[in-house]
Length: 402
Image (cartoon, rainbow, N blue to C red; front, side, top):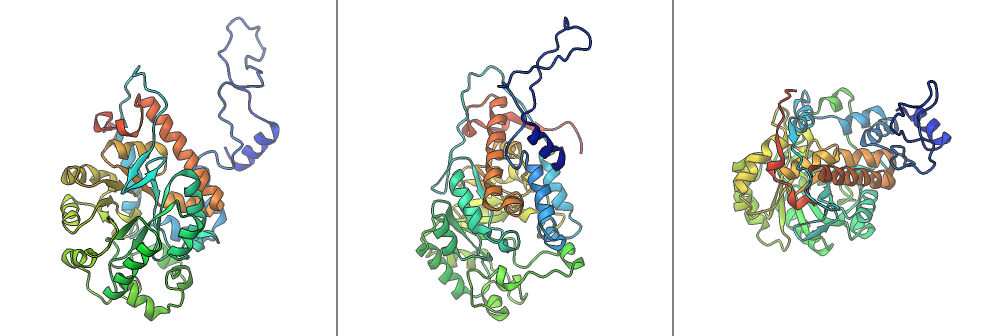
């Protein structure tokens, strides 16, 4: 349905629900029911009826070069496409007549209580998408019982986001790079700001090869990524965020990371894990959780889809730490598939950014509603009573090759 069709239908009032055709009805009569209180209706008074509509509105709302910055990936975007198709390669297996009641979607992750197993990612440059950026994301998350991972390279400082929505701004994100003294200071700052945990982005020692940005001659302005460093210039950011801006420092080692995290009072999650070996290394370095991620296809192109790597990492971790997954999640059934394959929670990045661009706080809130409704519906149809019952017995590789 187009936006014009939707507005026309809304003006006309709710659509009449269909009822079974009456074989005895006289020819030419209308077999459609006229009950003003429909039992089932697929019309919606909400601005966005589907996640797809959110993406469509985001594209309309953003300048073309900003849309490419948000929608694009690295290289030839093979991994970007693989992230989406990976969810299509799995089928789910429902159990019938189980007696299950209303699904329980609540989960705890690193001590953070969630009303559903969803966090939002630490996407930066957020004011490019909406003037309120991560402030709006955090406010919507607080209302939905979802947690924010608040970016280091965001448009607003950790403290500003935490003040806007202290119940949602529970995890601070850091890049383990640049000046170790600044990194240590930021660890102390995160604890002082009241965060419960940290997310360390390990797969970003330098920015990915993003050809859409190159074709558009598009550079991100310093002021939209320096919320945590409000007085920083290019040289200052090179000393703090390191290779994201000036590629001159060697990549840290696992031993260096372990040493520099040893005095942090907060548990930390390793973001960017794609192999069992790196999951093992992260745990040895002190990680309290791992995030299976290829950065949404925005860093190294041609790496596998994150979902395809999840079983290997689940086996390597062996239940020692919780596992999160991002990259490619577009709908509630994707969340269910990730949980069935062993993730404890998912992290939504591009979808949350699209919702921010499409409607600010309201858009992000609507995204959460749609995800919650589809997660719940999928779990009901699987015959489960909640997220804790989702297992790999409910999922198998699809027979359809895509």
